[in-house]
Length: 520
View 1 (tube, one colour):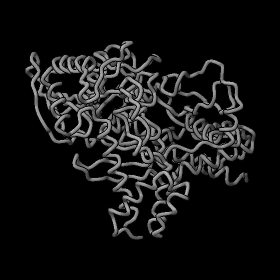
View 2: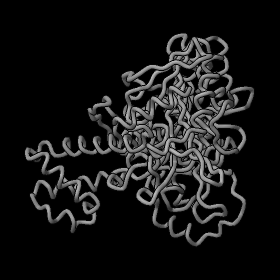
View 3: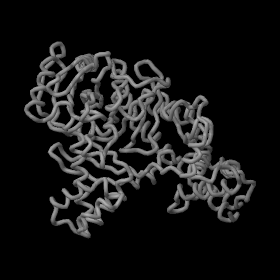
View 4: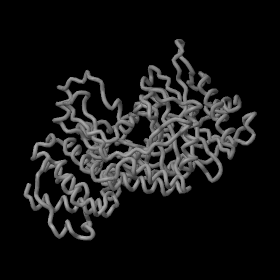
């Protein structure tokens, strides 16, 4: 790499960090040389006028990702990292981790805002730092495909997730050849020990692990325990944050978990917080580490209409509602936090023991294996606390081996994965493969070559569905094909959520739901 290009890139990056408040003007020479050290370079020298200027200007239209990619290329040339996407990413995180405040400073600022009664400022400043330091991948997130689909339940939010990078074939091969019998450190990607971790490639002991030098975690206290607050690097919604236990322990939904959630919204009342369920099939992708997800977003479920109300003896200050939502969701609300907590625990305990074979709900196997749990979500509405309890059941059958209350096989071409917390609330997170596959479907439908749907590997999984779309939309043409396919994908997500509901919206399901709420 020519010295001139490297010199200019480093100076622009340092100017960007200075202008964003990640470093100070007095740090300029140190920051320039720190970048050189990160990429194993001994030069070139910075421009003297730039070094001595009162302020380092951030160039208009500065592209952080492009600058970091340039530095990654230089580091590979210098032998500092592997010639892979993750190798370059480790350099990028190393550079940004050095050019941002230490955790102690981030925590100090956060704590001062909280102590001053300004929780919004605390999260605004923290989130901005994480974005400016490149931990929250704003450019990658912006590539996600998003739209809304109108359904009888309201407008569902649909995303095709393109933000997470694809795996490099060389790294896949290295992972296959690696010996991964050593103890992994960190134990998982949610452990607080990830903060500042340099990352490792697929061939390393323990396997691949992303670099986290620019991760900052703010300690918070929930129910008297030490937890950490961070933001998600590949956010699915506004200010998508994660609260994780300081101890690597399994997920659990119980009184302690509800106290954690309530404490969280007392600390940050402008955020919602929720937990994936704690059982396989109906739980999230990481059940091994106790954690919650939250942020500043109102989901479709939160705007759902009220279908019915009910009362629970002993909890007079708690309003109890059945939401008109494809999953079976109860909403409890009260200004009395303690009574709301007791009411929610009562519902969870009752649901864990509930069996209604008429609708396929079974609390336990003969050997005691549990099937019932909830996906809880908590938020503040003024002085009131709201607790949403989505009833979940992970029974399987010969007809539905992946789960009776899981996306059924006819929808797997669009959505096969578990329905976790975010999707329970009406935001679909669909796989990146759908972009090219839907393009192939559109091409064959526009060519009126329905036979080709089965012959093309990209469209074959969608062939039967695509024919039904063509039949339902004779008006499909070049101008509206993408919109029609997106609408129909949204309808599939609607069906997926209906599959996950334990009490269906038919006569039998309504009667079964009432039997449960009457029992409370």
